[in-house]
Image (spheres, one colour):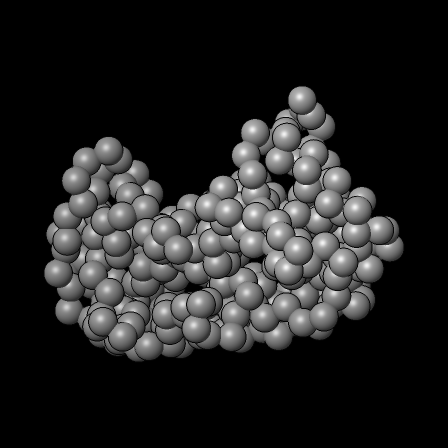
Length: 310
């Protein structure tokens, strides 16, 4: 008996063609062989499986129930082979065409845009479309191949490449602290000038905790609220009050001394869940070459740990 382990890919493809055309002669012409050779291939496949795959008579070739069942597996195997071929072809080629990238406005301006020049120099055949928005983006419906987002990872329909975690800092300028003093405990915040970001769901809540303890919300009376983080940052640098901002937004100002971290022994946030910086793309077994290239590029750009956290 013909051993099932000797069934070749070519045999599987011939079987699929015979199943779809129900004609040995048509398949023979496509393959450049005789109809009798095609018939022999099918006989050998039936012997290997121990099942009759086709009914044959002088006028027609009809799939049996076993043939209908087996074609599903044959097509799946042929599809896997084609996917493997495309994957290997992509790995051997250069990223090209258009890659549509989406990211948050302030983060994109500060940390995505500065990496575009080296990305383009590395892949000159790649055309980049960068859209910055803080709105929710669904890559299944919106024009985006790769989405940079900061938040809690919850949607299982996306794949994610995590770069790191976002941390928050309470900060104020030295000029403000000279005039108003520095808050020593979280309750002091209610007596200070606070500059609060207001998103689509309203003003941010300011949460503080001892490391490892539960988050506590401390109500504040904002001196300014704004939907533009850059405006609030400028106001803080001018000595108007205290901000609670992510590390990627204020790290340079903290290093330069233009802002000072407040209550550094405590953890601060606007969310109780960990906030993760990640690149999201639709859930596919093999992300496109362009997506992989951009992710790898920003892995290098951001570094480990993230360069603004060093």
